[in-house]
Length: 193
Image (tube, rainbow, N blue to C red; front, side, top):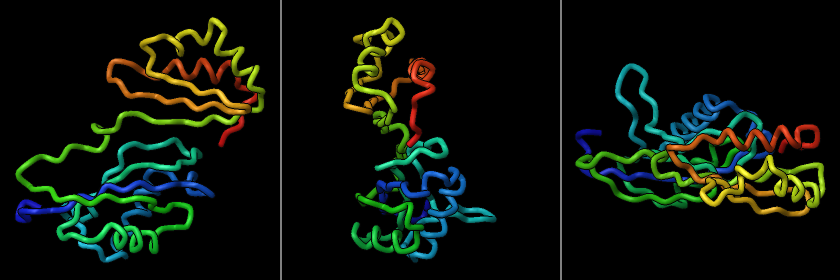
């Protein structure tokens, strides 16, 4: 990597569904490593006794949680088209994990690459519930939910008929422990998706 003056960073999004959500993070890493090696793309590998593709994931999800758009990146030593990248990797991935979008751009070894997690603004979660919209609204109007709804809260909620969407913005000063209050309130009626 030090001897390569111009490299290319491929940032891509992928979905995990239909069983892909049950791969552990290390299992997912191994699946992507194999797919990248089998694709014969011009990927830069780590140095050392056991070289691996220079692969990075922005964040990890808990086991069993499906995703529509997780973010990852890999570093290439030669430019390829975004369609070729997606096609070659997807051909070697399992059907339950597939790359949806890709963006490839040049980088130099003169400047330190910023990690993906440093650029991540937050996450959007969808919670499907076995309760009605009225019950969800009752919770959000209760005293227990007031921490979620404060003006400076990191959470933003959209309530629909049998589900709600939570947008959580990252902030280093705050933990997301308050979300567990919600789970304690609705615990018997939650459907895990």
